Length: 532
Image (cartoon, rainbow, N blue to C red; front, top):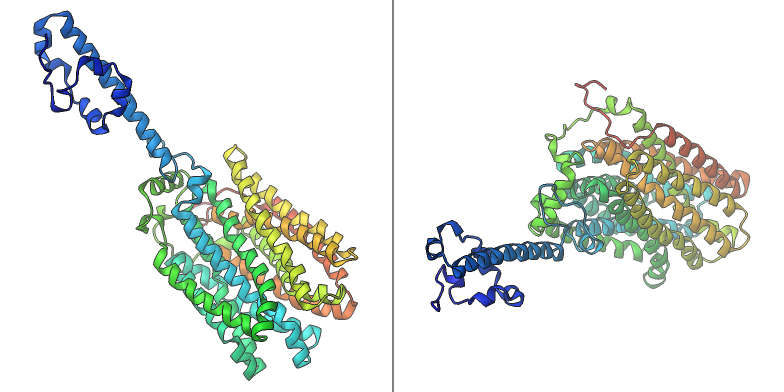
């Protein structure tokens, strides 16, 4: 029988031999393959009526072709979804994981990269004064203790805003509040030269306004990450954002002396202020507050985020957060206090090192200002690197079955006990290089606490992570003020930095024990209408 088969248009010119040729099958457009599924073999009566070996052979070969095309189409869909970004193709179980290449090119990483840049500007703006305080003190004849008061003026404003800012973040979302915060602190930084030229009071006010605006930065970061990242990626995301935070220290400490040598004492204030205004324009035009509102996000990534978050209690499941959060209920739980104590100790060590290390290297090891800035900057680069490695390790532990509670306690223990031991070594350092090595170890290990208490904020209270961060930040700011001002008075009374470093080491040990005892990685019930 030499007639042309006319079952439907896609296959009418094919010979029977073509069905056996896998190369031809591979070469067929997917449109033809998909349409071949529509062949209803029960309606091919003419094959049945012929009752010939040829008819049954054609039916069997068509069935084989249909099965083969289904298999190829299925395989092509799988390959296509793997080649596409943002994880596996959505299915019943949802996407399970995303590769590193998919993760690093995703829309959510663009968001965290912008957050990292804002935190870099945040720290660069605040750390400029740690370098500028040396020539300013010489020019105005300020004592060591008064220099500590000038530096701590930033913290006066920082004390006011975290709770109010965290509440606004929970209510309005991180995008809008972060934009307002960066715009305000960039303005305060830009106006600092004018304030310093007019009066000491104006300078203190400008630095306090910087603190008010920067108090919303970390709550906004936590809010955005809680909405954009599933729980199995949050430690990595926080580590990436905080890497920018630490690199901001390094950028501020290293560039400030160079900019001051070229543009005067106030050169870096002007440059960093202008960079902040530019960041706001990009942030407002290129990011969205939640993944489902992003016009750039792919369907694959959106499905991946939403599917993974549905398994870990997505933030959007609850109606809009109350404007006045349940403060009494929040403070009645010991996991809250474990976060408060951890944040307080973290801030104590952070601001003491940030504010006093240039002066420490200048006065103890007798290096000039530019060298002191470089020695002080190296540890923050180490912190950025170890922070990301800690985030990878933390997420890996959770994916491999380690409980969230145990993972956070491990990270926090390393983040506090490590610096405690390293600061003891710092007190015995005899050369600037040795001191910088011990300081780098202390600050590098300190980054592990970002995968401890800082991520833990999102886990115990996802709907109140902003205000909870504000509460713990306020406690941290109190501790930072006491540590920053107290270091100056302590050094004047005792005559050395070593005793204060040993005190800080002891406090690290005690805070680690408190966190291990009372923290948890499980959600805590903060709803007043429910039983605790």
